[in-house]
Length: 440
Image (cartoon, rainbow, N blue to C red; front, side, top):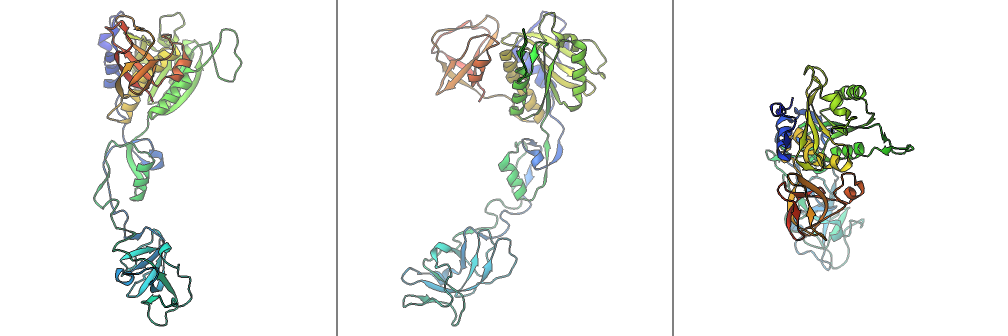
């Protein structure tokens, strides 16, 4: 149950944004680590350092298609006086054949193939005649180093320094190095590194499973016909997408009608696949605010439905909020308001940090910065509330988009930032430096 239960005896208590967020983050705990296959671990957070068991690359190999040679044999080679070498064999990537390069010899080699013994460098095929001749290189300018009677030769037209075009063993990482440290989020490059050092599984905190459901008998699914008084359900789509963007595995539940028993039953049914539940709508003081009716009843904490605290916050938009735990596993539940902007802003401020906490990330918040307000007129803000206005941030300035209405979805779609107006500020003049939450 919420750690703030002792502070909810006063129904008129108004919570600050910081108090509500602190209550959430002190209640939510990172998920227990599990061992996952590499591709299943994408987007997860490592819980332990990963050490390198074998050097990468594990052997000296060629970075070019060409010929493995001894440096002395191609010293001074030129277009006018090429070095003619006996080709003693081919070395392909993955080859285990033992080829030795002696004086006056070369081995044809492919990119990634192991360097043969005796060879000191690789000359790219572009520096040679490609070994196309069937016999020794002919012509007065050829400087043949191949043994007399050799049947396969290559002419080399440029000298090579020692280790030229050779990838040294351990030049990427060495055995015993730390490949990745605990706390790393596994993206494609990190998964590539794990595979390259031979790790098929890794210990991580799993991506949290988040169930999102919206409430309201007026809600209709997209692609359906609207009847009088109905609107399309956008909140559940927005919040499910936002949860996935935050790193969660998110499940969207269709809109639930304004019936407390139906909602309660739906929530209980969804607990089996939820590490976190998010509802939107029905948390205010109206006659049909069924989330409060369905989830704020008293009950045994071992049963579904226990300890959801509904509260008022000193913020705009998003004054009505709910938080607590539900069900036998005490699954965290955040109840957000139903207006689209209120719902989304509440998600960014409270739900996203909860998801990132479940993942075990050290930094759970969106980045913040300071920017100069670029506006045609002063911004007004209600006294005693922290206001979050949609804005567009660029080049050190931020411009408000849309009005203060919490239903303006079109303006929300244009915004990439939230302009923060503190509780003790009622007006912000153009040119004032303001705090900005970056959403992009």
